[in-house]
Image (tube, helix red, strand yellow):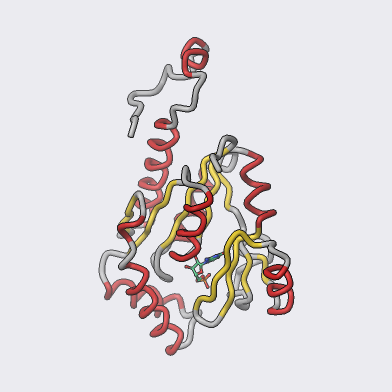
Length: 214
Ligand code: 5GP
């Protein structure tokens, strides 16, 4: 399934890696061209999280009904909650064009990459295990048991970093956001998709420095 209308960027990383903050910043900085595909979960909202902005917060029955209807592109259980990518959410954003950011865990990312082989995948990690624990504790939104469970899941997830196209080490949010923007710029510019002569004649490449062909 080639993505003609937009560029799909799948982002994964352990809880506490800062991936949501980085994605939100990138979108704030590029509101006209970058958007998030909102996913669904049975997890309760954290303080400050809003329905339809951060997640579609569903109860278990609603989620199961959608899953049975085939309304999810993929879904999975994560730390005793269900998470899924609603087809309508991703389809709608892809149809709008631009950069679509999908923040999901590794099994979901694998499923989405299978469906959209042209998607770019980025894994985000904190610099050290100590910093990961510190960030989760500082966030203060999870119980001690939940933090331990998420740290365990983080180790399993990080064994799959090699399946991703890019790795960002988030030592500093500003730098990591700039890195993600740079990755997107490089990938966008490497998409040789036809019509380059016309675009060149129209001056489309005037301020470009390099076009990568992988
Ligand atoms: P959190 O509870 O921290 O918001 O999310 C837990 C994990 O589920 C994160 O790694 C997040 O990226 C992932 N996630 C969020 N939505 C989806 C989804 O629709 N599908 C899958 N597979 N994972 C998701």
